[in-house]
Image 1 (spheres, rainbow, N blue to C red):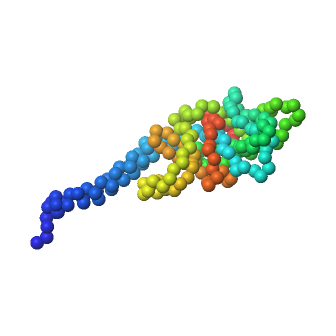
Image 2 (cartoon, one colour):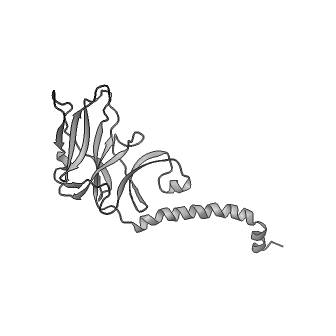
Length: 204
């Protein structure tokens, strides 16, 4: 006579729990990770950010800083200190409509004149838009960087199942990972920093 299901479960409660608990925990995390995708709207603002470029063989002669002044993105160029290697930076643009990231062409001086302490250059590729220097967009998104390993099946389901450093837009639990263009993509990806959010798009 075959055993009754209720008796089998009662006699093997420990085995059943050992099998069911990981499944339930995994299902919980899958649902918890998916809920923000359903409830939090996609980004509605473009983002300007700076990311370190792979080091060149020849050390640069200037240090470049990006900032926002009166709604415009500017680059401040200064002589690089002696006996140091200046980090080369690139300027990237996230388009919230296409969800793509592209590089902004830069026309910056490779060196400064004798006695010149600094030079400020307006980024022409962004001159027709207005940018806010706030780190958080009006819709709540913020640029974050994370280094993650393999979190198992849950990570594989959501595209984070391998060791990586990545830039992402985050808002109330929703995570949108940014695919950076060459030469900024993995495995050489550096930390990305927000320069500003585009509050008046104009032509870009």
